[in-house]
Image (cartoon, rainbow, N blue to C red; front, side, top):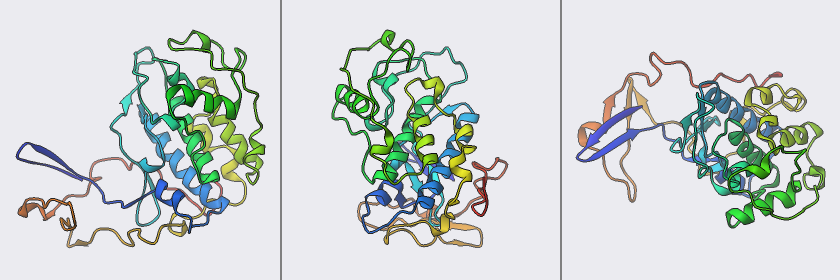
Amino acid sequence: MDVFSSKTNLNLVLEFLDSDLEIIIKDRTLVFLPADIKSWMAMTFHGLEFCHRNFILHRDLKPNNLLIAFNGQLKLADFGLARDFADPGYKMTCQVITRWYRPPELLFGCRYYGTGVDIWSVGCIFAELMLRTPYLPGESDMDQLKTVFRALGTPTEEDWPGHMKLPDYVPVGQFPRTPLRDLFTAASGDALSLLSRCLTYEPRRRVSAREALHHPYFTSLPYPTHPSKLPKPASAQSRPLEEVDGNVQLSASGPGVKAAPPNRLKRKLSSPIDGLRPLARKLDFGQAL
């Protein structure tokens, strides 16, 4: 919304969002319905589809980087590890994405990758929403691989051609594949189908964000809950920052919060989207997508 400097600091003024998906998942007073999970997943895929359509990899998708607005809208945040991927032959680091949400190709040291790394992370988030606990919580990179293979089975050359030639490949052990239905007992067939498409070993076979939005999971009943009716913690912001006569009032009160320069506490801002395209398409939650 704004950028200003103060001494040697560069300050970014962002929309205030005081909740995230991790807070909601951990709040045991909240009960999720299948339609609620479907709504959060639809908004996540819409935001990610916009990023990928504009050749941006997020590279750090996880529940506490999916922020929740006062009206229930989910927004992708924290693009500190994001980068463009217009050139498919450009070498990139594999030391990205929080370990529990990191795909196996990065754990094996792959330096050439695309949108599939974000899709794997979304699959882990999808599973976490259904389980209410992290799906693949490894304690180290090697343990992370073992955790993934215990859950999904050790990949073969047929499952994932060429994975044994990746730079950091090491044999991890042989684990049988366990059907997703054995763990996600309450999930619908369409939900398990989309989950398996996200957690496919071969990155090029994973579903794209655009394809995911057209998956039968989103067109079958129940339809996604409207964002305003989604579960939210009691402490969540009930309304946005006050706007008066076009002014945005920034509060600098509270423990540990440094006050902004006096002339910045209240200033007239032009619309943050003036001259820009909307960052995401609106969802119609009343009918099939």
